[in-house]
Length: 287
Figure (cartoon, rainbow, N blue to C red):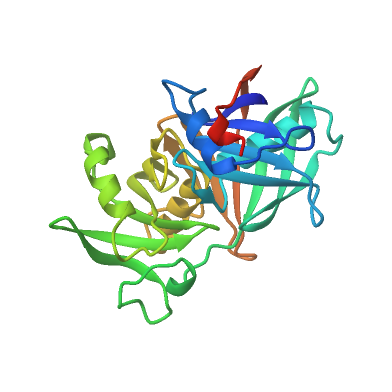
């Protein structure tokens, strides 16, 4: 199988051009290639294919083989891939995902994609659509600063979907957080029937926050695009920041803007190719 390793500020995936390759068992293939000791090493697998409703389709699988609805860092890499592999010459591209069709705009430098702007759509707050079952919510349906007990500790959580479920927790010092312990407890909490991505956020100023993320199916990652969008939206809902925010992640920075008029969230950030290669898949990935 031919592949390209790419990352968006450290959130790395193995990308396969499924206009030329066939991946028979994406879940098993994702688990195999993601292994950082016996595979290629990544946060998951992304398949780039044809679409009947958009220019391309992006199918992403987490490191544990589960299918993800959407990944903000991955979609920027898909946009870079299709442009630099001459699969399109347009700088505005529509990409189909399980979370709907996303529109992306490319910034070029000397013929290469330097950064990508993604229209991430409107955040979803209805608990049943995130989904989250807490039993209590704000009068307008939003879950903002709700005290959720995880382990034996109550955390103020703000829940939002950016195509996949997010739980945002604001705290004083994310750097000191034992995320390997608390992350899985959030991911598998009974309040989240489809599991959840959890963003732990420290507010630095009215336009800057620092974030660590525990992604369902992949553990802690260096960055999460939809998570950064969820964190920015949650920061506005809690009154901590303006609608234009720099989210500082362990792998780099993303710029997030939540437009007051349209309600849409825009994410801007880089995408980087690392290397290309061929890998022989084990038999259990081929059946």
